Every structure is written in C-alpha cells, then in structure tokens.
Length: 355
Image 1 (tube, helix red, strand yellow):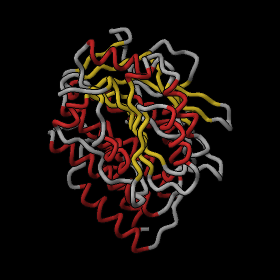
Image 2: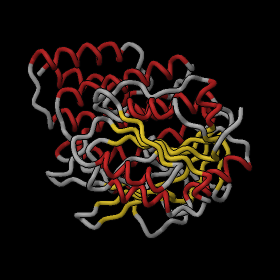
Image 3: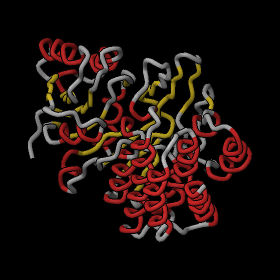
Image 4: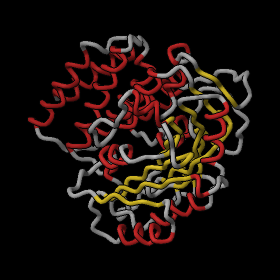
C-alpha cells in the first residue's frame, strides 16, 4: 500500500468559525514538514462562515482538503467516518475544530509509532478552562513528573450533591489510583488485557495516532452516537492490536472547555438525545468487552456511569423517555455484573429511572 503523506489529520467541522483558524494554525505550526501532512476537513453543513474559512486554507495549501456533506449528520462520528474513507496518509490523527495540537504533536507521535512499528501511539493532553483560567493535565494511571498541573479526573470533575461527595471522598480514590511507572516516558503494550489500567484514561481520540492500514484491515469506524463514539472506537482498537505505545510524560494536545452560553458543543446541550445516546454507547461498549472476553469492563465504564447519573439529573425527561432509557439499562444489567460497584451503579440508575 502506497501513501501520499506520512500523516492524515481528520477534522469534523460544524459552525466552528470562532475557533477554526486557531485549530488549523496549530497544524501549520507543526515541527514536522507540512508537506508530509494531509488535512481533511469534513464540513457537516455549517450555517456560519466555517466553509469560507476552510476554503481559504485550501486555496493556500494544496494538502488541505474539504469534503462538504450534503446533509447534516449532527455529530462528530459521521464526518470522522467520511474523512477516514479519504485518507492517503500512512498514519491517521484526529483534531477537533476548537482545540489545538502542540507544535511537536505530529512529529512526536509519528516517530514513536514508526520506530516501534506500532499500530497505535498516544500521549496526554491539557484540559484548559479559559474563563476560569484553570489548566489541568489528563489523567494517567502511572506516576509522572508533570508536577505543574493537577489531574483532570480527580481534581477537575464538576460533580455536585451526593454524587459529588461520593466522587471526592470515595469513588475517585478507589477508581483512579496510581501505579509506579518504571519505564520512563514510554510504556509498551502488547496485550491490553494485561494493562487494564490504561482504560481508565479518557478516550481522547485527538491524542492518538493510528496506522491507516490497521484501521482499514479491521474496518474500524466510529459508531453512530452523539456521545461515546470515541470511547467505543478506542476500546475496540485497543483489543484488536498487539502494538501500542503510551507516552506517559508527553503532552501533545490542548482540550478547551468553552462553557459560555454562546459557545456550547452538542455534547454540552443536555437533552434526551444526548442522555439516551450516552447510555446506549456504554451498553455498546459493554458488548464489545464481552465479545473480546474482557472481564474488567468496570474499569472502563464505572466512571462513565457515574458521570451519566449526573448528566441524567440535569435533564428533564418525560415518563416515556425514561422508559426507553430503562430498557437499555435493563439490557445492560444482564451483561454488566463485574464487581459490587458496577452492580450498584446499574441498580441505582434503574431506581432513578423508575422514580
């Protein structure tokens, strides 16, 4: 298989004019030669001037390409899948239209992937809250020397009430412990089942690089969920390979939490579709774990289920909508039984949906 570029970057775009140039400029500023990078932007029928900005970059750079969808899909999974069909790079990376890569992101991941003949390589990110002027580092199950930032999952989770109390005083300490990292920055994984702690890391698709032939060989694609599509993609890909490299002390991406009223992503608009798709994606993930005979799916899903409870409590759903959610959770309870906390969370969710 011949390739035109070292890396293809797939970017879904929808009404992103405010931050789109910010993201694209982070690609232009890469330490890797720009001629080695293909940028595929998939516009999901934007109604602002996102397409004009995209066309401006495409006019300046021949390796910047645009795919205009005929109908709005309404979630990132669709544009990403479309983009994957058009990549011509040896490896694939993903970037959202309101975030940015650090200058060495492409070069770092490409070099570590190729030098170790890895199907997947990934690093860490910073979670940035511009309004609050807070910066956190992404969680790692291993100790590190990145001392200037607190951890995003333990210190940055915004849960309130009884759920917040349980998280701060029990769940976070129980779920997110630390293991001594004896391998410096690089951690090599041949069998993900022997390193289940890696599943505690949020999927963060934009911190990863994938070998294109690996994706095509296994027909990997993002499932059609508003939320959780990246979780399922990452989990399945980890099961399918025996060559992963994790850079524990390397940050290559900035993930921006823009929470103003005029700047909310689809996954911050809490409606029935989001609540339904989220729990449905977790059920789908539990089925993937079952298919691959992975008996520690609780490591992956317990934190997501806990967060889903908080999401659900912020929604205002009808009795019939709650009934549809109950059907999924009831089905999930048949296969998601590993551990007391798992069973308790499923039981608690079922009680919530019946009240």
